[in-house]
Amino acid sequence: MEALRGIVQKALDDFAIELPSWGFADTGTRFGKFLQASAAGTLAEKFSDAQQVHRLTGSCPTLALHVLWDLPTEESVKSLAGLVGQFGIRPGSINPNLFQEQEYKHGSLANERREVRERAVAHVLHSVELAKRLGSRDISMWLADGSNYPGTANVRHRKQWMSEALRLTHDALAEDQRLLVEYKPFEPAFYHTDIADWGMALWHARNAGPKAKVLVDLGHHYQGQNIEQIVAWLLSEEMLGGFHFNDRRYADDDLTLGSIDPYQVFRIFAEIRHWEWEAGRRADIAYMVDQSHNLKNKVEAMIQTVETAQLLYAKAALIDHEALAKARTEQRLIDAEDCYKQAFETDCRPMIREWRRARGLPEDSLAAFRASGYTERTARERGIRQRGTSSYA
Ligand code: PSV
Ligand code: MN
Image 1: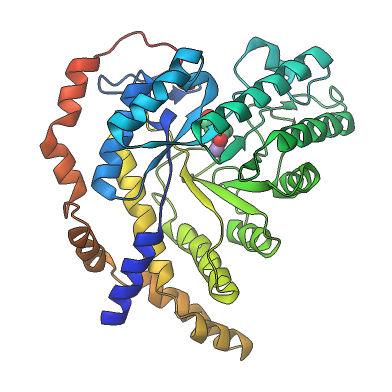
Image 2 (image 1 turned 30 degrees about the horizontal axis):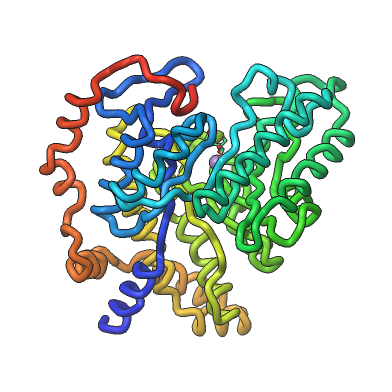
């Protein structure tokens, strides 16, 4: 038990997960937005909410920013230094926004029209410059580009345009920056998506250059796809750059991580930990949340998400890799499977509570958050109001 405790403590010390600014803002479904009085409407409010989650979980020092929603003006960029000082949260990945402007309705970097492509490239290069100014390492690229009807798009030309733009972006990066390429099979386009799966993302990342890696969003796969196998392949190619964590039942549902299938999250962490055990070093992966909580209290949902990630990461850390490797080699299937089951079924919660105590975190973060009256206070201060564009829907 003592040994397990040490493993869990070390795993949690090493585990950081980035929060999405848009997860604190009012978001909705395709059919409407559900407003919460305590939702963040400004960049400062998003930093403030992120600070609450970090204060209570100890694992979220950075906040992912969407350029259009968070940094639309030079003033907003300039305000960041003050926000970092005030809230103790650093800007994380920078997400260019190539899907909301009217010009992008037929795509951005892969648009048939040269002037639209040029505008999109200019926005991405501007985002890279912003990231440099803010000290952000990762430019996270999600392209909504695609088409709705067969015959309407030249898929090969679009691939070419996309690859040229991604290479330009890559070449504008500083030495220590990375370009993360996210894929998604459908939505908003429903016939074809220009970067539809991990193979296409891998191809684009390789083509762009050595600082480009693939980003796996758990909601961006077809039903039944074996995501941990994709993770294993990307690890073996040293091309796994990051995750967008969420859960889903059907498509890109953006539900709370582990709410539907916690064993899948565990299996993903298991692949990573096993690779790290074999390689003898940490994988260079940015763990990020990409969720939208339009029904739950947003800060509470984010705390719940981070604690789920911590719990499942801690469980994966308990896998006996030596025993697992031996059982695999000797083809003792039940014993190999049991290595997973043993770890997954271990109740890590007492060890996590101990870790929390040792780090000066409250034992029950949700209770501490509720007792703080933060939601009531921000609901009073923020109220339901007509907010500018600070998220989607
Ligand atoms: C697209 O579905 C996505 O996963 C991308 O990461 C976006 O940036 C994010 O959601 C927020 O809309
Ligand atoms: Mn995503």
